[in-house]
Amino acid sequence: MFIQLFRNEIMKMNSKKQGLYFNAFLILFIGAIGLAIALFSKTTAASMDAGSFTSLIVMIVPQIVMLFGIVLGAQIVTEEFKDGTVKQLLIRPASRTAVLLSKYAAVGVMFLFSFIIMLVASFAIGAGLFGLGGDVTLMDNAMDVFYIFPFSLFLMTLSFAAGVFTTSLGLSIGIGLFFNVFSSMFGLLAGKYAWSKFVVLKYTSLAHYVPGSNDPLGITLGFALGITVIYIAVVVLASIVRFKTKEIN
Image (cartoon, rainbow, N blue to C red):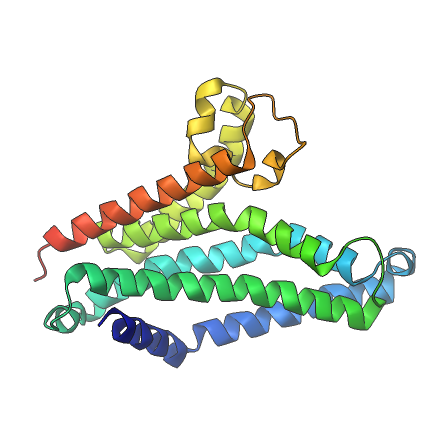
């Protein structure tokens, strides 16, 4: 039943073509950056290759993808309440938990796919404009994406849960954006304290905790990833509990 629900959610999302349009925009945007460098910055272009170009894109574009994930996470639940179609979902034999998790899984897959599109398109465009070679490989670029994806997924999850609790699209998006901005402030203001290592806002990028990074608090990559996963699981669990007890008028 869950697989069928998941497929239905993917089909509904594809019918709106949001993912298609966004991924097309990503490719065009990345291509525009590459062309701008190739045409107007000859010095930079001369020293650039596919790997270094992809590294540049991974520094710039993920914030845009993150915003897409926040909107998508908030939208998939709130629109059901807005359109009144949530009742149709709940008359099915599937449990409320399965219904909600199928939505979460569909959004997560779509979100991850956009990151993959960003990575592959960047490397392909970089190879076409600047050639292959250099010290930075596609695997290095993939690891850079891996380091930032968990916190991005947390923000998507947070906006998803906010949609369940508030049923307000604007408020749910705002909550995701607020925590995205506040995470940077948190790192600057509280990142040096020992208790901060138990707060997910510290882990906007796991690259700071790779082996050999010598983190002042002794934080390892596994610990940082584990804290992020725990926070995601707690937020998902809270949204399930709320959805199961929510009165649908």
